[in-house]
Image (cartoon, rainbow, N blue to C red):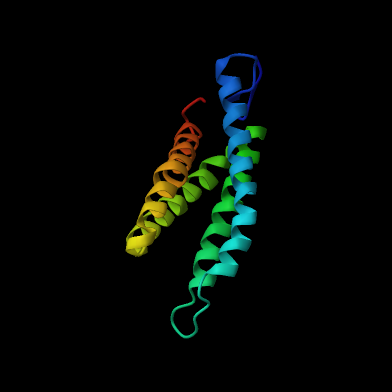
Length: 139
């Protein structure tokens, strides 16, 4: 069993879980990229103080970047994953909150589905990665 950056990369169960989590985060981040194009094409652009397209596409782009970087840092056993995972978890929770609280009546079901099936579970994985990467935890 090899420990690199405080992360078990060995053949055991912990190493398999870490490889799975790393791959899942990168795939989720990359899967957001086509969604950014859809979002950019369907949101009202707006001008003045409300620029919905810029706000939502920008938030989702930051989430995508955070997921990919966290997954790559986790795969390398880099302790900096603590920072990117915590920031990404925060972005995902904020996205779920604003999606559900700003959704119209007809969009509420889709917003809740996205929150409970994608954004919040990914936020939980990121929070777990961040907590396990805290300095002094020995993991």
